Amino acid sequence: MPNAEECSISYVIGRSKIEPRASTSELPREVDALQERIEEGPCLDAVWEQEVVRVDEVGADDRWPQFAQQASELGVGSMMCFQLFVQGDQLGARNLYAHTPGAFDDECQEIGLMFAAHATVAVAGAEHEEHLRAGMTNRDVIGQAKGILMERHKLTADQAFGVLARVSQELNRKLVDIAREVTETGAVPGASRRRN
Image 1 (cartoon, rainbow, N blue to C red):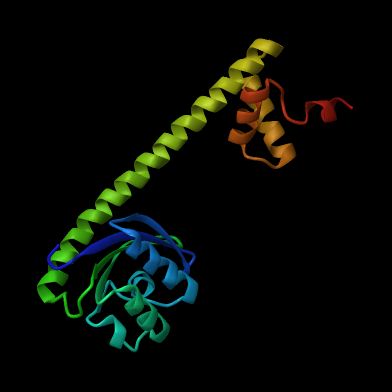
Image 2 (image 1 turned 90 degrees about the vertical axis):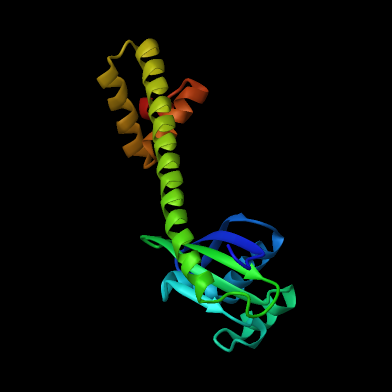
């Protein structure tokens, strides 16, 4: 990316919590923490108000007075933030930093938009893969718990699943958490309480 010296990808959750996901150095993490702490800044505007937010001279920008002063003191001269995606109350932003003011022009913005589109696809793919992996892990844990119950109590697969589901409902806990406890302890949570 032309003129960018630092870069980060951040998630904004619930309109204010900024969760850094990747960054080139400590500076982007510090700037994310600053924006979360004072609840203002270009990253927050990029995800909620505009697709692109360009800050030509951070120290002189009056849109976010607290942010401008403190980010400038951290060594940020100019910034450009791009909205990556919106998923419910979770949003993504790609943030570019330069130590000098005026580092980003219209050409940088056009190139940045193109990269943001590619980053959106990559982040969405990574999130999807992470969810698939979590789903597979959960399925495996539930399968293991069913196997334990089938072997110990001579149940069918459907009966073992029914036990897990019933305990999940009775204890108001996720099915996978009940299954995990069965695989770790060999016992159904709350079984002694149900016998009494």
